[in-house]
Image (cartoon, rainbow, N blue to C red; front, side):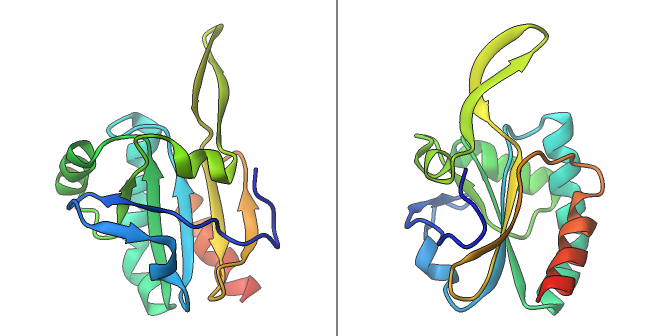
Length: 154
């Protein structure tokens, strides 16, 4: 997993509207990059909902939010429409970004092993440097925790 002090890797993928989004689009901006396993699952819905409810607070502080999962553009579009998500959700269908960040790997659920995204969040400064990592995120309350930490650390 990427660590504090490392730069965000270069990437380019589609967002929920099918627009191309590059890592360089966020240069000069503070941002939160959060990885989540799957649209419409309970934990992911909680996390997306809380970030959506706090989005204006993040914007007021000059912070952009970016959600990333392996779901495709159509799934993200439906998720954004249903949840009222205003920030970009990126479709990492081939898991390139997840692998670059080190969040793709073996997981276990009910005794079964499988490959998937480890729910993780990265706080990034204007220069594209990661300054805080949350490797094992609990969705409930995470948005507030991130905003509080961003405001304390910056």
